[in-house]
Image 1: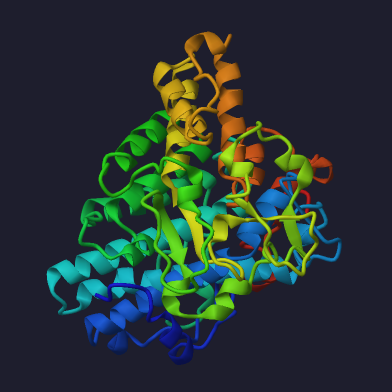
Image 2: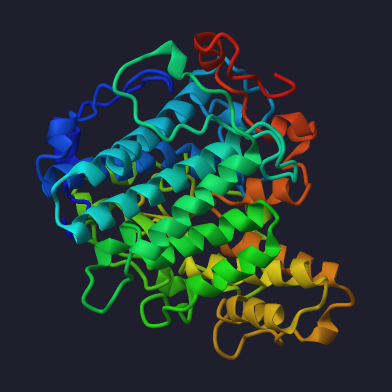
Length: 471
C-alpha cells in the first residue's frame, strides 16, 4: 500500500474525469482485470475514490454551511448562491454535479468492495483495501443523504433518502435502475459499512506517516459514525461511537490551543497535520500548488468571515485572534480577514473533515439529549473545548452544573461552542437544520432544507427516482 495519497496526481493523468449520472457507468473505472492485476492497481483506484470524495467536498461543502447562517459573507454573484437562498432548482447544474461527484466516488468504492474478494492478493491487503473503500462509500452516502434525503436530519427517517447503489456498474441496463431507499435504510448501510471497516482496520501509531490522517483508520470510522448518529438522533449510539473515537489517546490528542491546530505558516508543501485531525484531505502532500488556491477566503474577494459573526466571540478567544484570523492576501480588503483553518499562505491546505474537538462536542450533546439532564461529563467535555480557547490567565470560569438551570440551557451552550469551534469547516447550516432552526430567512420553508433531486436522474429512470417535496 502507498504510504500517502500522493499518487492522486498521477491518477488524474491516467484516469480521466467523469460526469456521468448514477445510472450510467463511469468511463474512468479500471477494467476488472486491471483492478485485480496487482495491489498497486487496486490501491490506485482507492486513491482515485478518495480524490473524487475530495473533489466533491472541496468547495460547496465549506461555503454553503457557513454563508447560509451568516458565519461568512460572499459576493452577490457567487455561483453557489442558490445553495443557501432558496432558489435551487432540480435542473441546476450545481445539484447534478454534487450528485454525480459523490456517486462517482461511491462507484469506485463499489468496484473495490465487490471485486477485490476475488483477487489473489494477500489477505491483509484485501482486508485493508475493502475496509477503506467502505469508509469512502459511507462518507459519500452520508453527505448525499444529508443534502438530498427528505427528513434525514430533521427526524423523519421514514422519508425518501437516496438510491442505495451497492453494486458497481459495468454497463448501462435500465433494469438496474433503483428507487430512493428510505433515510433509515441508508443510515443503516452507512453504519454497517463503518462498523465493518472499523473492525478490519488498525489505527495510527507513532510510526505511521502523517499523511495517513488522510486515509481511513479505525478511529476515523468511529468518529464519522459519531456524527452520523448525532444527525439521525440516535443519541445513545452517538455517545458510544464518540467514546470509541476518543480511545486512542496517544495519536488523537486535543491541542492545548486551537492556534496549534491551524498554525499560520509560510510552508507550501507537506505541512504537518495536528494530532487533533482525525480525518483531513492533506492537499500539499500531492505537491499540487493549484489546489491551494481554490477558496476565496485567502483573497477575501469572494468569501470572508462575517464581521458580525466574529463579534460574537468572547473577548480574548483565541479563535478570533490575530493567530487565527489572519490578514490573508494583502491586496484584498484591509478590513476583512482570512481564517487560518486552511493552513497555507496562498490559500488552503488541509481540508478538515473530522477533528477530535468535534467528537468532544458530539459526545457532550448526545449525553445531554440521551439523559435529559445537566450531565456532568458533558460539562467536562464542553469545558475542555472552551477553556483551551483562551490564553493562560485570561480563561473564563469553568462551567459547573450550577451554570445551567435546565438541560436545554446546557444544549444551547454546547451548540454555541460548536458554532465557534467548527466555524468555516462546513457544519453550521446542518447543525441549524438538525436542531430545527432555519439557516436564514430565505430558507424559512423547511422543504428548502434539502436539495432537489437532479431532474436528469428522475427523467432517466422514468420517475422511479422521485422528487423531494416543494421542487
